[in-house]
Amino acid sequence: MFSYDVVKKGLEGVEFDSALTSLYGASASAQKPRYIRVLDAFANLFGEQNEISFFSAPGRSEVGGNHTDHNHGKVLAAAINLDAIAAVAKNGKDVIRLKSEGYDMDMVDVTDLTPKKSEYSKSKALIRGVCAGFVERGYEIGGFDAATANDVVSGSGLSSSASFEVLVGTILNYLYNDGKVTPVEIAQIAQYAENEFFGKPCGLLDQMTCSVGGFVFMDFNDPSTPVIKPVKFEFESCAHALCIVNTGGSHSDLTDEYAAVKNEMISVAQRLGHGFLRDADQAQFLNSIDLIRGAVGDRAILRAKHFFSENDRVDKEVKALENKEFGEFKKLVIKSGQSSYMYNQNVFSVKDPISQPVSLGLCLCEELLDGKGAWRVHGGGFAGTIQAFVPIDMLADFKRRMELVFGEGNCYVLSIRPVGGINVI
Image 1 (cartoon, rainbow, N blue to C red):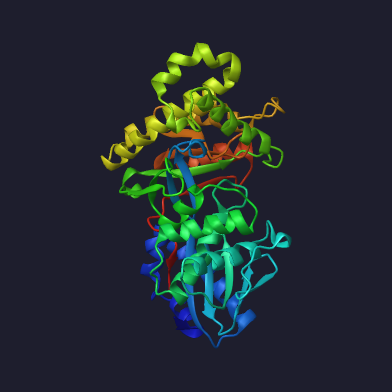
Image 2: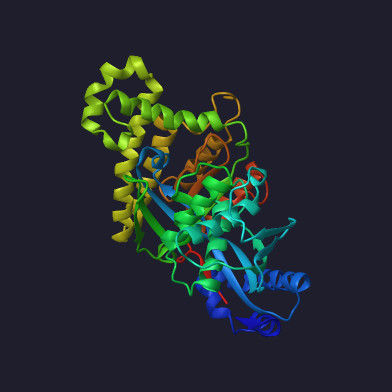
């Protein structure tokens, strides 16, 4: 913790350069104005006579395991260099006052930790829920003041809500628990907050990746105790950028499309005598297609095939990264995208087949990157974003070409962030 003057001087100078570089790499200097802006916002709201700390939590990108977690499958994900940051100080009260850039201030009484339906879908619910999760696990909480900014683009599939939840958990961890709460626990608390207080029945993928950082392998065979393994790979060594392209389209009317993917996979599992596809045997599935096709339908069969292939592919992707075989990794990413396109069929909505921005984006990626990069649908699909691994020497042209079609600012150039939630300053 430092005084306002010390933090301001350090950000304007070089004192905190190493801390920022460890998070943002070559773009660290570009982060300084953002940190100073948040610091000044804190001072304007709460005064300069505080001992201030800075915290950060990243967004995330799914890399492998598209639509597998809900059937207890495996996923490869990665934290990214877009993040939520906060200037924070204890306030000696039983209230959290948190002002996010562009939003009204949230005030949460930390002595009242019961879910409130009136707060569903509001950030206040997430703050209250994270506090409740800490208390349930026997950890300490208390009041603090915070000014925050989040450049994890909302609606981009990069998990802006999970980054916010992990940010609040990281603040409580360092302010009141000496940093002893593990990243896995913070992720579980964040999921609890979103499920029970925010009103969204999400899985654990987003929160875990944001909290752990780097490339992360997750096995949800037992969702209550998922296997979590960081994957050692220095992304900077591969001379590629991770690009997320927002192809447009709204997710607001797609809830039934997402639900159908899960439910159709489960319908196949049930015909094979299991609750989820992870419990079924792929050979049994392939030998039973003629018996179950009439009951579940062709699309369910294709989606089940995607699950089995994609689940196996995650292990191969992890192995490729660990062996520093980035060329093999890119081939597997392309196969993942092809499987999502042909079998899982989550690249456009059957409600509006004329509109296919994700399909168009994937088509353009193949034209631009064939034999050199990799591309796939990103996240839930049907609308929104695609993911591409682009060689650095092709990056400027790739970004220009994609933004000609999908609009300026809709190609996000990212890198893999090596750490999750952290006390920066």
